[in-house]
Image (cartoon, rainbow, N blue to C red):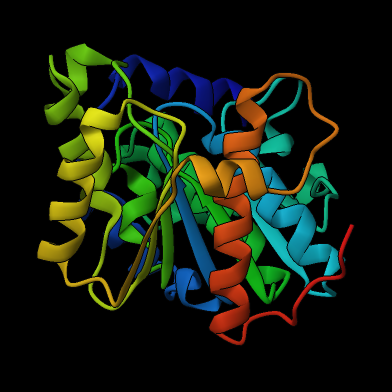
Length: 256
């Protein structure tokens, strides 16, 4: 399976939502069985923020699926439920189902996203946290409806794909905004991106928008992670937990 899957990397990066959406439809729309979805994008901090949200939601008693990338030692690290890796046989089965639904025509990341959705949906999580792979507007994860989303911040990254300026990259990252969402803009990036992110959120019709600043970062719970930047990630995670509580997806977590 891994040999076939990693061979798909030769296709490179192909932006678009139609291909993965079609495969998910052929699979019976497993993305609709992910519970309340939290979509996390941004240049820096999205992985840490996603992991924090998953950990706190678990502490609040929810069953939580987490989809992240890349992995370090095993592909299975990308899709966990309550912190546990799936069995290898379950991953192979999900891969075979994706391939039978047309997945062989997808890029590596699209295939991994589809099989991850299958694996997480099978666990019936109350909350699923999805980390954006690259960009946002045309990232495969954006084919999945998410009532809660955050852009942790924007800096110059992947300029060959996303654009040469902060404004252009911010516009791509802001592509995860959807009508009716509770949206959060974190404080982990260049302040010049914030007006672009705000304008895009308003244009998309988000229901609630929270823009974090220095006071939110200072007030965020302390973490055991090294680096002052993790305080900004904690502030973003804290805002997303508030949104989950407001949505009724979890109860207010205990103070830690």
